Length: 287
Ligand code: NAP
Image (tube, protein in one colour):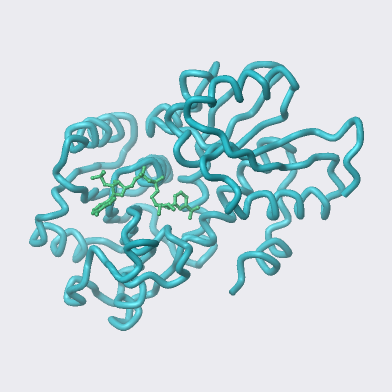
């Protein structure tokens, strides 16, 4: 890669940001396609987000990604949101269209593409999702837009429960999908929802550090062989939930391909070119 006077800048803003695999993935893809772009990761404090965005706009950045904790906070600095970003209330990709900042979310498309890439067909069926944070709402939104028939969201009955209920009502109103929210403590309902589901998605932090030995479901009688059990966590590559599901005979999948495909979608927005998935997958995403 030769950085020169015409090189276009793309970036990640997060706090922290240094651990991200995104710079490797994007720079490799730019290099393979011979594109005059570079991707850098910047650690931006929440209190500095506005200043950082103004600076990036002033230097005509092509686009940038947001990771925790900026996915919601970024919205007030943008000029426009896609329908999916508006529905889920989160942005992880920004395009700079001649000074107009447009917010997209690629977490949901990344997840749905990873499910079909793994060979699973889930359109028109029922899914159960654990958690209702930024990634979960993006996944629910895209799944509903892609034609999922029913989505059952299970989350803790805390101060954000009613906000999730409002999100579910709104998504049901704007799509053909029936989205319902249940208390995670209602294990009877969870077992029933799973019996009707073809896909279970863990979109909580439970299973990653420091909760590496935890799983929100430990009773394997909740699983059935036709249930695809997926975890959007990718480190560790096999969470306790996936291990238990595999032992119960379920097909399983971790969050690595979601990471790959959410990046590929952002890459296409910025460059107008398809990311060369296979060499990137082989180099950075296969264990
Ligand atoms: P977030 O917005 O903070 O949401 C976290 C969710 O986890 C919330 O719904 C929260 O519940 C739930 N949760 C946390 N602790 C819990 C507990 N002890 N019991 C039950 N639920 C609990 O985070 P996020 O951005 O959605 O990220 C969630 C996970 O997805 C992280 O592990 C992240 O690394 C991963 N992720 C992966 C990808 C990928 O490309 N593979 C992309 C994005 C995120 P409440 O709603 O009750 O607070």
